[in-house]
Length: 80
Image (tube, rainbow, N blue to C red; front, side, top):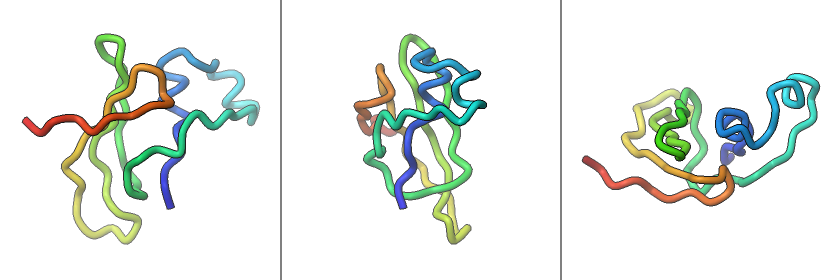
């Protein structure tokens, strides 16, 4: 199962939180990353940054990050 991008769109101001809370969702992207839970998303310097999380099985932690400028197209971030 892949994560769909909804809340990052709210953070980026692409959709309003009132629309989300009312159940008016628009899928922007299926996301190129593997299925996961517990991921984090932040908005900084005009980009959305998605990091971490782990598989739904609860085993381990994924040490990768993804960036997007529009919530639709995502690129794997270089590891530091």
